[in-house]
Amino acid sequence: MYILFPIGWMYYFGTNLDDRFKVKGFWPTEEQSHKIPLDKEEIDKELARMRMADGLRRERQAAQAQAQAQVQAQQASSEQ
Image (cartoon, rainbow, N blue to C red):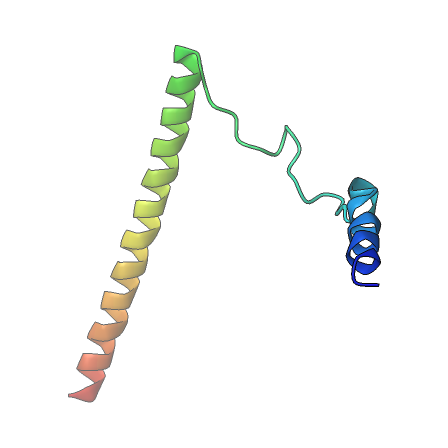
């Protein structure tokens, strides 16, 4: 009993693991995963894309900060 139970447990959970515990769509496909640029043109494109995204993020943050400053100024003027 003490020997057969662990052996049976290991056999049950150790066989056919790919079909038994497989979650479809867990790992990203090759199209969904990152792709490291190797050529100079690809690197330049990726740098341009990253810089554009960074610029958009900075513009949004500046606009949000400006909007918050306006709201605070309006609240300060309405309190007086």
